[in-house]
Structure formats: C-alpha cells, structure tokens
Length: 308
Image 1 (cartoon, one colour):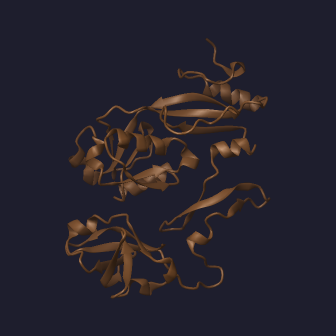
Image 2 (cartoon, helix red, strand yellow; image 1 turned 90 degrees about the vertical axis):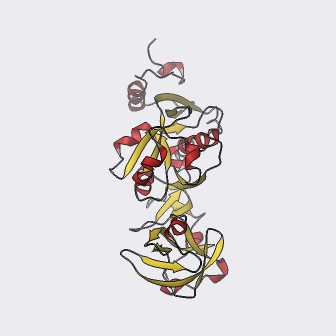
Image 3 (cartoon, one colour; image 1 turned 135 degrees about the vertical axis):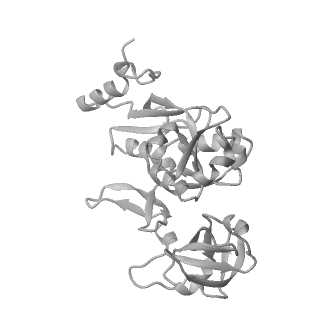
C-alpha cells in the first residue's frame, strides 16, 4: 500500500476530516476518487483546500464522532495504482532497505522507515546503540532497558550498568484529561493509538509501553516514532497517547497532560553499555566514574565499579 495522506482529525459536524497530503498528485483527492482508510475503501464525496492541507468528505462518514475515529490514520492506494515519478523523485518503499553512509563512506545503518512530517520526511535507520557499539563506531552507549523478562539481553560481549530509574506515566492530549481521572487506567485508553519511541534509538521504551498495556489487559495499536520530542508533539496534536518515563515532563507543553498510572508496572531503567573486551580510554573511564556515581546497582566489570 502507498500512503497518499494522513487524517488530522474531524472538521465540522458533518463528517469531513482534515487531511495532510503525502502525494504529488492532487487528483488523488478529487470527488469520486477511492482511497483505503483503516483497511476499507472509501469514496470521496468532495474536497477543498484547508489551512494547512485539505478538508475531505467521504461518503458514509456523516458525523463528527465517526470522523474523529480516523484521527491519525493513513489514506492509501494499492501498489498497482502507483504512478511514474519525475527524475529525482521516489516512493518511500523504494528507499527502505538502502544503506546509509556518511560523506566519508562510514556506514550508519539501513533505512527501515520513512516518517512523513509537514516540514520534511524523517528517514529512520534501525542500526541503533547496540549495533554501533559492536561495529566499533562508538565507545559507550546509553539507552533504556526493556522490562525484566521482556525482550532479548544484550549478550556477553557488552557490559551493562543501570544509572537511573524512574516511574512510567501516561502522556495524554488535554482533551482526554477529564476522561481518565487523576490516575490513568490504560484499559480506558484501549481504543487510542499509542505512540512509541523507536527501539533503535531509545531501546526499551517501546517494550515498556507494550508491557504496561498488556498488564492492563489489551494489545495496543502502536505507531513507532523516532524521537521522544516527536511523540510528545504528536500527542499534543491529538494524534495519539503514550507511556513514557516521568522525566517527559521536562519537554511537555501546555497541550499535553502527564498523569501517573493506576496499575503498578516496572520502572524504566537507563543504562550505560560498553564493549567488555576493550580497555577503556581515560575519557571513557572518567565518564563511567561520573555515570556510576548514582545509587543504582552496579553491573559493570569490577575495574569500573563504584566504591562500596
């Protein structure tokens, strides 16, 4: 499927929706055109320019309540409906899997996803912290560990030390504040899209989100986003909800509400990783001494353990 637009939310009271176009071909949204929305084909009744994007009315979606159910969903066409592009233009699926190199030829990973944004597209490489350490492109890595018993370990070639712990919180748009109460039961949000930071960049935050939802009795609909700041911005725009460490309060704006969870879930752990077989440089040793000056348990090698 080829994405040609994304629904931003309901517009008016008669079932129209705001749409961010993701195509070079404006006639995709002409009256009578058919697009896939949430797995079903819908015919366009009318469309007109919006500010920004478009306002589109589909046959059969006739009130604001139904229209708002499609907030954040993509409008798509079948692969067979792809049209030739001009030189230098390409479809997103054509770049997924390509190798990313620096100007000097240093590999940075492969393109795993293209995220559509109003200003520009974001290309996501899935070679993350662990891969960069093993490829010797970095001496140290910092990431969030998955919940205990969830996901794979990092292997015997890496030392891992927990340097910070914090509780998880619900990150919500202001319109949901009254609905959820002072402590959030995630089961009451099972109909929402959950936004999760990319695993390659943030490690265990996505597994933490999934684990919290499963402990609440449901399997969430998850959309992965590259950066925590982007997750918060999308939540503020009403395009989903999230579960993140409590320090997210530092980047939350007035259009986002942070609430504690009603159910106990494992805390989020931040860890430092290094290659076990390498002798650390003086700079790495200094960083480790500072990082390990915390009350968290030390699981690095004895040579870098904190004083007892």
